[in-house]
Image (cartoon, rainbow, N blue to C red):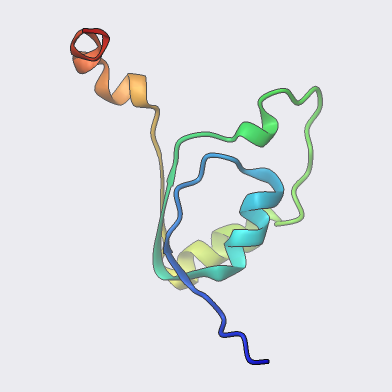
Length: 86
């Protein structure tokens, strides 16, 4: 059976770790990756060295011209917090 390779244009990163490692090779040229969380590491007691080496990650970002941008909801949208609570 033929299974086409899926390429991803936008991946909302909220987990990190093994999930991101599985998605990373599937990111398309000019993919966009908003990073909002890394749940897989929230309770870590030591540094877990990823299988994706930093140089490979940076090289892929450069070659595929990807956009990776972090954001934290409260820091970016705190002016709307009172409205949100209401």
